[in-house]
Image (cartoon, rainbow, N blue to C red):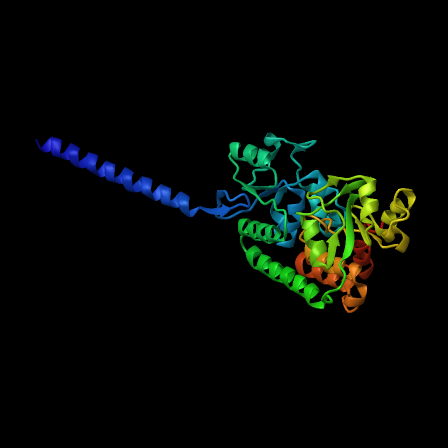
Length: 348
């Protein structure tokens, strides 16, 4: 009888040990992870401490740089490795793995660099990474509210001092928008602005319901194109009928943008072309016009281009230099700042 009591006691102790041991392990695992909500609204469990980041959305690599997390990048994209100003500010990006074959993510190559988390704008990439056992956070956005949320979400993922930097950035963005609104003349005629995606196709433009349309309006203008959508195809007749006051062309310099419009006989009589009010959109560590943390500067730049007399005191060269010093810890020369503002590449 005593023997059975001993066996029962041992079994009870063993069960208790396993119970409390299991609980301890679960608590330990929970303590080592945390949850973030990505921009699709999905809750993603990630490690408490993030040391290795795979940023598979080229635009968001700039956000990581802004937040001081560039040293954590172990995977990136070919696009960002070819951005001349990004490479100039952070040359080490050229050594970071790009786990792609064309546009296709190579999961095996991604796993080799052992990322703690994946940042992406592509649901298919997120799914592939998750299936491979890597938590994936979607940080894609389409407007200024989304930009702020994306920066803050990226900062939450990175941890450390990044959330503090993100809060500073968002306050500065809001301050720049308030500054532009404050200095605009009330009841002034809103100039019509045409935003062309790039000089290789002058009929591909950005319509309403976009972040481009948002900064055009914030800067005191109105979109010359009333059709909704990003990178939409229009006809030459639509552009001629709209007859914009100002034309801004992405992915090129102001000199090349004006030359491209003047060369095209369909557009030589446009108001903006005749007046020489055709500008290449600034291109820094990422182009300012669309998915860019430097969108904070875009609002100021566009406001000055649309209404120079109202923004005489706004020194965009100095503003650009200050931004690069504050967020990238990079001493940008006056000449380089002016090249960025003109949409030009670094001098060779």
